[in-house]
Length: 195
Length: 195
DNA sequence: TTGACATGTTATCAGTCGATTACTACTGTC
DNA sequence: GACAGTAGTAATCGACTGATAACATGTCAA
Image (cartoon, rainbow over all chains, first blue to last red; front, side, top):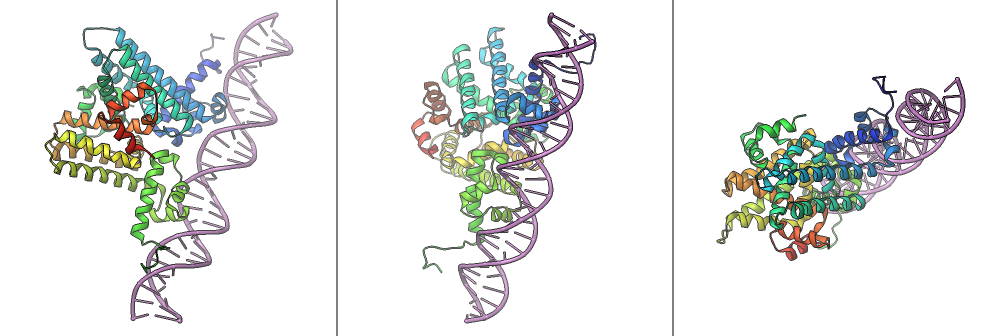
């Protein structure tokens, strides 16, 4: 019934997506091992058991969160490549990446994903995701290998700044560093990164 | 007695350092939450209880590991700054950073440290460490703020590549990316990063 | 309406982990 | 060669966590 405003149960696909969104935030803040399925369940507003049963295991959930995050980046980059406004493509990609900061969890979940390359399943997912993004900026955006590498490097710095919450620090050195890291518009960066 | 080759007990300072070295490797591979004090104890060749009691808690141990890692980077950079061989200082710093790859755990522990900015105690340590290194390359090496920022970005990319173990991947795209990330000498990078 | 299926929960469990305590043994010194 | 202090271990515990199972309830088609 859609006449009732308060739907009590969600179709599986929507519930799945809402769990993924909640898990993205929690994994982004605490990392894979540091996050608990109970924290994710609370964030999603359901029971811990349902989180686990929906994805089979915590590891599977994390891999799904990571794949979804890579997909978001791909979509944002493809849109930036298509929307040619005269600026160089690298600049458009950079702006698109900064916009992703609004979804803090996405970038932070990927940071944690990339830090766990030693784990068998998670590591493979991480390598695949990282190379996918590298190929996208090289082949679809047309950046030279060294340009693509530099671009990813700047992205990793943004991830680090975000994880450290340096944009909230008030020391002048932190302000200066974050300003350069985010490409100059500290004000916008801070707004996007605001909880 | 130093006539006996097999010393059975170590003075506190040496034992402390050996635990820190072992913990650096384990934290580097598994992260803070993913590592267990028992794994660290096995790596150090002592009992789990002794690891915890020596540092009071796992968190204190991690913070000590992180501070030690930052100290190693400081020392390596200061040496590179002092040893002026005609090359630009940024190039010397880059080479010094690549050399640190030999101690994989140091860079990987810092990667994990930087990913936990939301944690109260660990986050503060991470911000302090990151800013310390930024100030060093800016003030002591004399890099301009944007140069220092770029330098840190390349460092973060190296950390990521290392964590993902991309230097061991055989796909041509991975080889190309790692080559650019490490400054060209893939062979040396692989040797240093070898377990 | 009713029944069948999909959505969700409560209760519980076995394993793991950091920490504490009580105890043991080595080491150098007077 | 005993003593005092330092280095280290074994045993154990309570808390936490991911997973499972049994059960409950909402939803929709016929």
